[in-house]
Image (cartoon, rainbow, N blue to C red; front, side, top):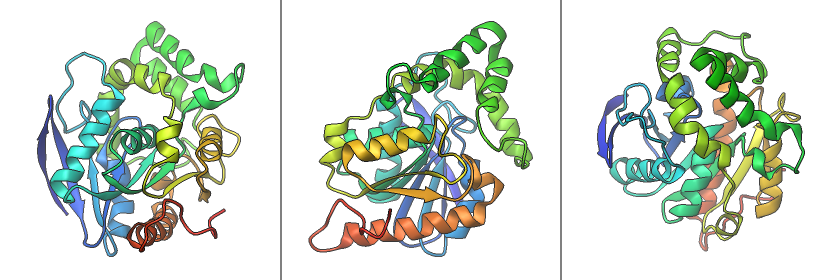
Length: 282
């Protein structure tokens, strides 16, 4: 593994690169830390050049200036990472908030992704009016206003299935705790207001795949993936386990990404290219 810092507009981004083969950028969710995917990246490094990074304002990256971070900024950061480390084009995997950023990247910079896997984007605004899940972001914001990062973090964790059934790496946990205030102040408003650009995603010149964990189907961060897939006419795939299965059981999660990313890479390099993965994916 090699690591380094990349200067972008308003921040220096910490990154890690493992392996060789087609480039695969992995975008992390809440907490924005490359360490979420360390074990998965090691598993995939025999087949892909796996790029992970700390999102701006999080962990070892800079850019925490007290102002809101927009999704356009997050997408521009991902684009800059791909330009610098992957010659401008890469497969993209994002989970949770990382999936929202991946969908924004796909819509704003369609020349960059060779394919996108969006795992459990908590895009609750695509759910019907009155759906209880749409209260998630306001509820956590209210918890932060009352009790700060610790209270908001507890409220957040209560809604994530499988938490406390596995151990976080100690260094990752320490960095995550240091990122909580940034998450609930600078990042929360943009995530709460996200709506996918359905027209741009439907017309994307690369394959897009949505997915969610087998244990998460009824939850607020899983159901939007099914609705977005329906709206943009993209396939949906079931992943193993829970929201953060990449920490609980990285080997089977990596195996799922390996299969899907290989199919998307094949689709992206086929002649002529097609935006849809093979129909064998459910």
